[in-house]
Image 1 (cartoon, rainbow, N blue to C red):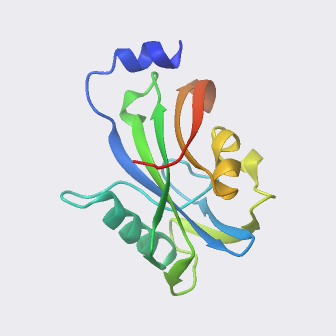
Image 2: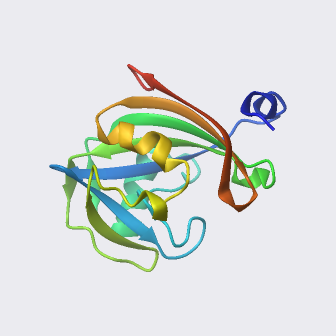
Image 3: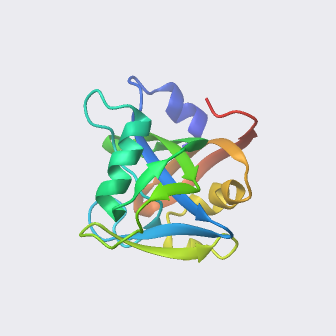
Length: 168
């Protein structure tokens, strides 16, 4: 199955989620997911908005819950649509933010274990398989729009990544 064909058959808008990356010099904060969706993988922090919560408010709340950090000055760098034909409940549009401005130091919680990595030495083999196609671009300061079609066992079946000037 191809991305274009799958997208044509969608009958409802994708639910939104957020993903945040803290940047300190040449390092990025990733967190090991300890439970739930994405368990056992390094990723940014984030999640789904609650009722009447904006995506930015969700990013701030989720980051505080997951690693005890209060985000400030979010910079939207990507919009990524994820499609899972074998499990459509997982379909989502992820709004990706980076920031160099936050309050408090990241700590481990029941859900996430944060760790700093060099931006050019990401643990891509221990991340979602799509990350290798877009995250290095974001770490180099690029803004992107992307789509990924996943098969069972998190296999990337098809994808499209485009650099954009403005993420909207």
